[in-house]
Length: 292
Image (spheres, rainbow, N blue to C red):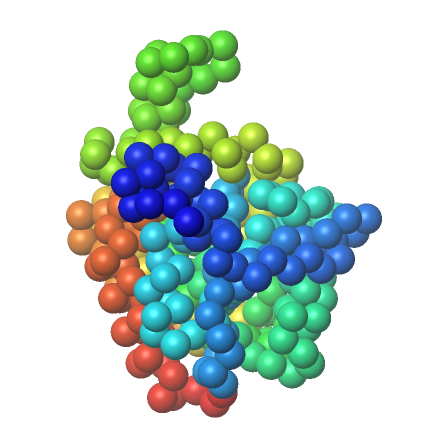
């Protein structure tokens, strides 16, 4: 087993250690498979299913998985179709993605089992379409920093990385993290850079047409289960949490909308302690209101 010192200085070792504690399951995805990673034991509580953002993978949640497991939940992190280790869906649209998700969750959990969906950015939009199509499998959806609400865009600043080497490449990657995902320079650390490169090069679906400008706003009225939300106070691509909250409340007036202070778009990475406490409180609050 890797020592703490090795893990602290080696992003690949951090990823490998957490992934090594998971049970990996592959379910059908068109002509290939979809990859899922599962931690924890089934205690009878609703499993938590995590969905990542665009050009991401399960590792978008690398700083949150242990806290969820320690709370006594079965945690299932998806590589959404066209991302990570998952192949493309039969059709690159929400219907195609939802068809893969429903087959996978039924295979993993058995028929009729309900889950709590927690989706970040693109993952939150994909999970909302899934909940609209298969509400019998969903207790609630928690969206995290999602686009698609037809609200004003924030200022995103990205640089070209192709052809760059060494420190110049690293500086550009860090700038891109700060231009989109994170707010504080110290948050764009070696692990964040490692995950950015590892995940982006394996993504084959361009999610823009599946999100922008209003794909989430269009589907929310068709989601018959509770929809809650968590937003980074300093989210760059989808700024001003109050504006986002207003749109969500048009279809779900009882939304539990919470803001992570001093966090950017990737709030669960930048402020994991605050995010984990917020998510667990939200899950526990709803647990008493919804059937298992």
